[in-house]
Length: 114
Length: 108
Image (cartoon, rainbow over all chains, first blue to last red; front, side):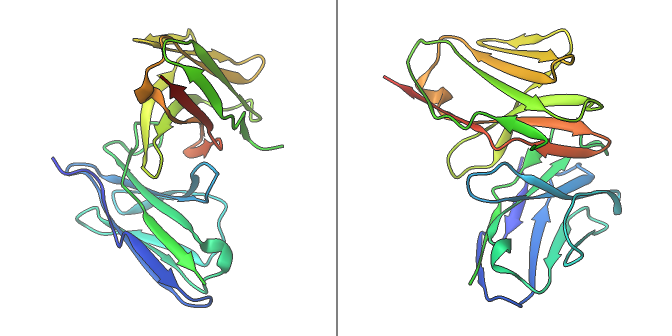
């Protein structure tokens, strides 16, 4: 079975631009969560969606938004990019609605803002 | 103070050694605890959950001390394939907090 997939794998953007990252969960998983991992740090929770509804939100500015589609795939949008947004963006899926359950991570999208 | 703190290491140990990592957390209301493993330039993967009574999975043993607000991971008989970064994760009210990780290198 396919694992969590993310696209694109790498992305280079300029300050002030907008970016959309995409994630497809494992088949049958209804929960998708997003994390930002800066080099040398652990992942930081951004959002969780379950059954197309936002279930949790981390401490990120309103420039970050997300949504989940009827097929449970998800998009993370970041507006007005800053240099500090450069990071690995990880998507994770799980069958259950709470982050308490095992999260299966995708390979990530590496975003570089110049 | 960070919500989840880990010694970044690196821990460099020979094959067959026993190594232990600790992780402290600041929120006494934290509900659940996990260890994830992350290989270099790869995604994190769940290693094990940490139960109040402590739990073991093969060569790996996890312990929780709620009074002192720390969790630990013990790896016995280290293998070369154990080389990775070990992330401590604390869950509370549908929020996951990851530590920065402890890097382990097992050498022949």
